[in-house]
Image (tube, rainbow, N blue to C red):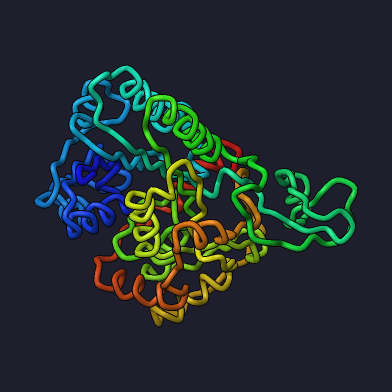
Length: 379
């Protein structure tokens, strides 16, 4: 079980995982398109993520939507870690065909090849799922117990009402951690495709003699993540704005929250899924179990960089965004012994130290916002 194919293995999570597994003695094959949105121009030369792995792995440039390329990459592999995907909530709401083709189509093709290969060697598939499949998080009502609010309406948010609501309940709801048994009701095309990926892997793999494992990652961050991609990751977006000495437009009221998990913790959890048979057939949350609101994120970054820029809490919002979500880690702790080791404060220090060592990137954020405005998705 030492031959591992990592699809999307030149990306942020994939490259870190590949290097970690190489250090442990695994033979790693990486399949990746080297997307310009993630890796920039001339990625074979300029992408730090790619150059960090190119001499340590067998690299195949290609797409998971290409049958011949994917079939070739699967030959002789023991484990597949399927990370290849288009990512980003906002972009997924208008680049719908592409997200479905890559995320759903690529996963379907992966399973189709394996289901029809009598000589396959793959024994386990680890799929990168996402907290986005939950949609809005889990809440407690004083009178009704556990409830799962539906997606927030544009009319409510236009009126400045950003908190979730549940029909028939007027009292405030208490946010609680989302466990793996929580309701799945994604609020974006990205979330729908991740749900589909997870369900296909968990459903089909056992029927063809392959053990499936799914990890529902929360918001992953750390040194090495793309600073030029304006469609994912507020830490990168805010950092680029701060270093360009531009004000930060904070959406809604700034109290929306996420669970930020450091890259090293994600790699440790994923490695446990590869190596521990107790993970087989299971779905796990991967996060810290701590919600951090956006105002706190922005202020922490500003303090860490030592660059004072204004914050503007605008009341703007993006359709498809959720209000709150953070992970219940009870299951992954009890079955795999996983414990997140890097706090948000420690992680931000490591992240901003790395960012400060990089060239200041061109701010493409406004371009992405304008695209969403044109599509009627940004208010």
